[in-house]
Amino acid sequence: MRSKSHILAADIGGTNARFACLEKSSQGGWDVHHFAKVKCADYPTFDAALSEYLEGIDIKPDRAAFCAAGPVQDGYINLTNTDWQISVRRLTAIYGFETCQLYNDFAGMTRSVPELKDDDFMPIREGQAYANEPILVAGPGTGFGVGYLIPMQSGWHVMASEGGHMAYSPQTSLELELLNVLNRGGVFVSLELVSSGKGLPLMHAALCEIHGVPYQPAAPDLIRQRALEGDKLCRDVCEVRAAATMGAIGDLALAGGARGGIVLAGGVSERMIDFYAEPRAMNRYLYRGPHSEYVRAIPMRLLKSPHAPLIGAAASLGGF
Image (tube, rainbow, N blue to C red; front, side, top):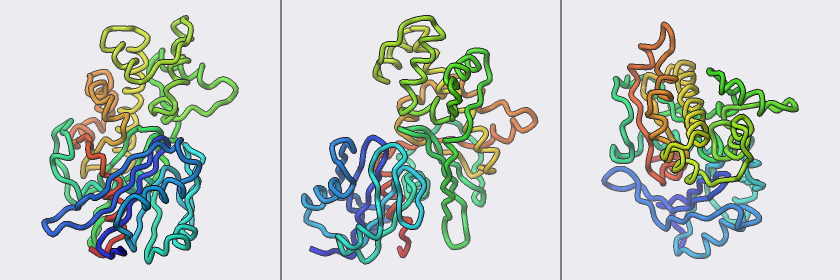
């Protein structure tokens, strides 16, 4: 059954792809139907994953909005952290959508913020949010996403960016040593390399070398657990990642004038939030020389909704 009230939405990251059919609720907000999450590695192409999803539901939306990890150009994206490619022109031809749009994944994440409810967030720091100032939405998942939400008279404008690929900024002797190890062979050491899920094995291996112990791959959950139990190496892994993230959040807040608030997002942010909140990492955000009071006054929240990028993609189509 073709439907004009539902929007087919997808959120495609480097590890997982999420699908749903969204409908604007008469009570405000969005109703999410037929939510599904799949591993990108289980499908050779995005088309294959999308086809299987559509075959399993009884709704055939006329409109589609997809957000994916990487820069979008002319309705096409070659995803940054997987081999998939997505083309609006190709999908429209195959599925006959009346409207089909493609957005950067953090553009979708960012656009979701004004659509969500208070209980979709966890407060991290209190502060004063200014209604007419930009909101920063940023944080690590498989990669490191950065977006700004700009208030306009006509609604909201999303400024997507590739801020996660800015250079890593070490501040301690350990971090400088880490930079030197990662930089061997002229490798560009980005914020994403140090903070994200994709970069964790390289960063873990580099810190093993610095500690003088053999590198043994370990799952992120195990590293965090060992860190909480007092393991020095794992503690360094978590603290360096947290400090890099929170230092970057401070930089991005100043650069974007984000006095409308800060929203931490991404799967790594959710799992690492306890380390972000520790003084060592939080102070990296707070201490900004003469502009310390500027960032101290900005409220900060953690985004918890698994549907956020899907809602943001649907809301980006407009017309509601």
